[in-house]
Image (cartoon, rainbow, N blue to C red; front, side, top):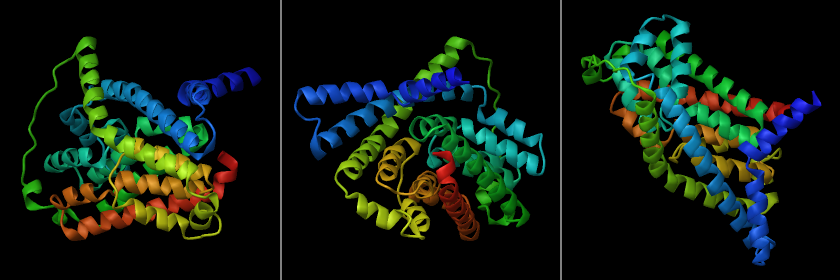
Length: 336
């Protein structure tokens, strides 16, 4: 048992967490006389997190895109059409975990599935789960917060997706989808069988495309994280987002909505906030709000659905995120 734990700790700290890189950067800065003080700490945090996130990003996108090559939109639609009721919502939420990383990328697929006649609740389960929960978030959260936090985060994210889609389905809001979406016909395209080299080429292309798109957000996120980690007093963070403020989760969820980023851009901010004394539920609520309810994605979604349905979608996601945040606050001592 101790051997297995040692192997797992090594994998989590040295492989996923890349602790060796942190030590290497620290040694380099120390040799330059920059490892001490706030400036050195900020530089160390910035370089370490930027390299770590981009390396993990490349590996994860390659693996996820390779898996995704087996699930083109038409095949995904056919899989979903075989299921009914809550089973369909569960499958849709699970399929959302192997789709693109940001909410804006998921909305065109949502439109296509709706046009193809899939139940509205099923398409919303997919839409919620796709940006909020993916294989990338599982691995990245594991590298920062440990496997318990990562697993619980993914499970609760899937529960929000399934519950939200089921509720929207029960409200019978089909007439709240814009007419041009309901009347459109999805193209019945078939995905030809691809060989390993073709799938690998597709995955490499996705790595380059996604890395180019998310790099500015990662850069900004790591920069903000470095400032929080070394320049903002711990007392300030604790007073706003710690035990002293029972509304910290609500503040974090609302603050995250106007922003636009994905899991890779929010991770370094969450890491810095947690190290300064913010509660776990607060930082995870912030991450969920940013990735699921970013302002650009809400604007895009408004073109496909009417205000009533958009309002219900935002309300369901926001309430679910806040509940998850308070739940994580309650169990923080058991999973970290």
